[in-house]
Length: 379
Image (cartoon, rainbow, N blue to C red; front, top):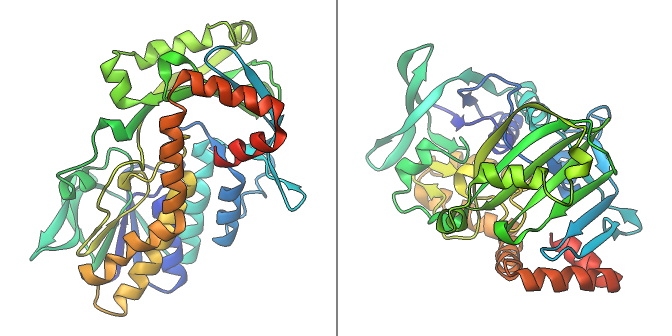
């Protein structure tokens, strides 16, 4: 038994495997899917995600043929008030929004991890192996046969519906700390070169979006908090159809054609208390409830949690081999890196759940440019 297992090869898992392999740590990356693979997501990428990928030596801006840049943003309030403006600037440089399908995006850090020396195996993990209170790997199947994969430390990054995390976390956050989303790709959509957000009273807290991909293609979707959907008996499928055929965008979709089927997914929000470090194991990315409670975006936080986990694991291997005393530093480091931002986003989510507040915010954004820049920076 040696080295590290990383279960799940999305952004969080690939970032962790990449960093560990770069430091000559034997690391095996497990995933049940073959890459490239699709992922339910709005495909939106913030400027800070590109910066973080660059720090990880992953050049996403070089993907110019697939990376679509949005210079402007549109927001529509529940009562129909609108704001349109440029993305914020810093040091004289515009910090654009970007759109890149997750099937393409996730493939890039996965490839980089393998280039750095990580070993990849298609493996369906179903439960952690726990011995004497320590996680010592995972049990699952490969090629239809039951198998174990053992390691000194296991990084769990197998996504929103993580079976492994559920086994370790009997008291997980309630449905108030989760969201659901549905998205589809369309072609023939009137493109306006901007990221568009539509806030409707029936989906608060949440929103609908249109994110352009270029050449008349767009990622279109709706997301809302899970507990609200259950309480109000909101059908996600119906909310999606209502948006596409609703008053704001119906004309733009009259000649559009949906590409493939619409897909739905779960988003574990970072608004509740959750334990992410265990003797012999860390939980990162969506599996660790790192999704923004305000936007539903999880790519940046996944990458940061993966990078942070790799640093903690590297130190633990050289110290106590992965006992809880060393690995618990992961929670502290994550709080230092992204904790305050997530706390602000949780507060903003609660405020912007009130239709009247959203109306006033968007009206104020139209009147005061500095306030608009502040809101866009938070969002």
